[in-house]
Picture 1 (cartoon, one colour):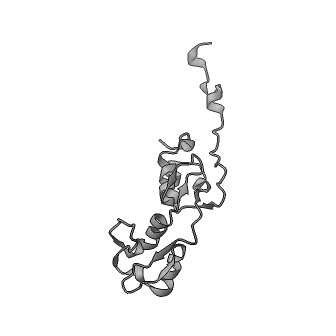
Picture 2 (spheres, rainbow, N blue to C red; picture 1 turned 60 degrees about the horizontal axis):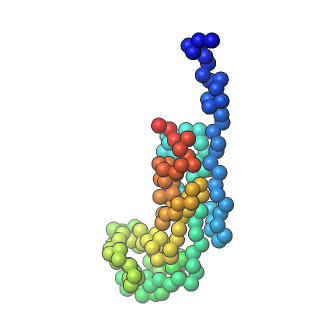
Picture 3 (cartoon, helix red, strand yellow; picture 1 turned 135 degrees about the vertical axis):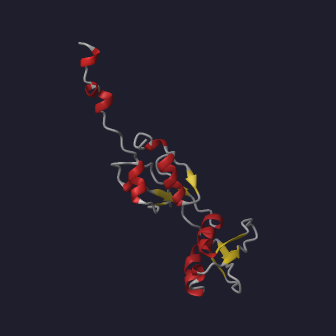
Amino acid sequence: MSPHNLNYRDFSIFNAQLQRPIPMQMRPGYSILRPPSTPDSWRQVFPGLSTNYNICYESPLDPNRLHRCSILGCDQTIAAIDIRQHLQNFHHGYSQISLRLVCTDSQCQRGDLAARSYPKHVLEHHCNIIFLCPYCGLHYTRSQSVTRHIMQDCTAFQDFRHS
């Protein structure tokens, strides 16, 4: 048989089903989180792969970690995990103005930040929250970074990326 008459689709490499990425077992105390993503950008990178694969594992937060509120005039010390609730209850509308503030944590080197970023800042930098890629175990401080990692770098998804 001439090589010109071969049907290369008959070879097993062409007929093999791609192995779907399988998440690793979740660490005790962690929870599954579905980070925000744009379905259109997911479909561009992974045509035919469900957005249900866009997950990360979120580390547990220490309920005993305290934080002093950085909003001017407020010196309440609260559990860091309650920062969103505190801001909602005592500083309603704080994020809707172009307010900037400086984190009052003595260990913080951040400088000033947008008020709307303050709750994330506290959770990510003062509660030691970690987001794990469930497919390879790399860790990040933001859930969106896990999504970006999955879409760009995670080896578990290399066969699914649209070139």
